[in-house]
Image 1 (tube, rainbow, N blue to C red):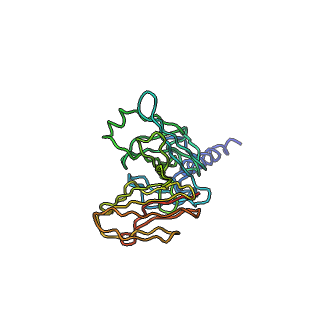
Image 2 (tube, one colour):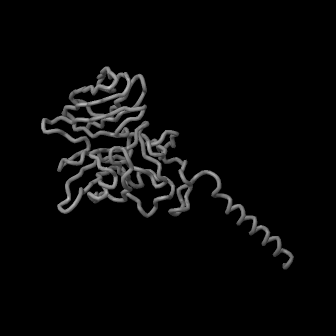
Image 3 (cartoon, one colour):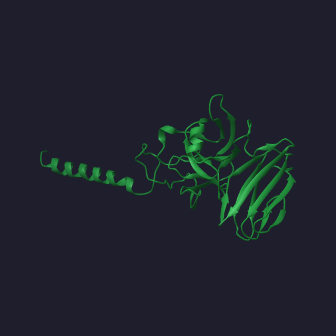
Length: 266
C-alpha cells in the first residue's frame, strides 16, 4: 500500500491549489473585513459606471424594497448637533465594512454642502461644532447610504439620500416651512448638481416649492406632475405645486439631461 501515498499526496496538493485559486474569479460576499474585493459585482444590485460625485460607484437596486433614509437634526444641549438617521429596508453593519455588498446593509456617509464630512455606523451621530468649523462651515447636511464595499445604494441613477438644514431646531428631510410648504433649493453649475441628487421626502398634501438656479439656459421638468419651466442662465426659478399623488417622481433638466432630485411623496 505504500506506493499509493505519493499519488494521494499529489491529489491533495492539486485540491489545495484549485481551492486557493477559486477566489480569483467573480466577486463574492463571504470575505471578512479588509479581505474582500474592492467593489462586489454579485447579484446585490447593478454596479453602474456613474458615481456619487465623490468617487463611489452607484449600486442600482429596484425601488420596491430599496434602502431608504430620512434625516433629522437638533441642537445638542452642550455643543453642535445631534443627527438622527431614520432608515428603512437597511441595517447598519459596522463589523463587516470592507466586505462584499449585501442587500440592505452597510453604513452611511454625511456631506456638508456637498463635501464629505463623516462616515456613520449607526442611527445617531453627534456633530460637534469643531468638526463644522474644520470643514469650513456650511448649512446643508446630507446623508447617503452605502454598501459594505463602499458603493452607493441608488434607485434609478440617484443615490439614496436625504438632507436637512442646520440652523432649524427641528429640521427634517426637506426643511418644511411654517406655511406647510416644503422648499427644495437646487443649484446647477458646470454640469454638476448641488446638493448631489437624492430623495426628498414629501408628505402628501403639502405644497412643494422647487427653487432652481442654473448657469446655462435649460428647461426644468417634474415627472408625474407634468410641471415645466424655463431656466434662464443665472436666474433662480421657482416652481410650486401641491403633492396630491403618492409615488416617486423625478425632477430633471431637459437640455443637459441632469437628474436634480427624486420626490418621494407618501
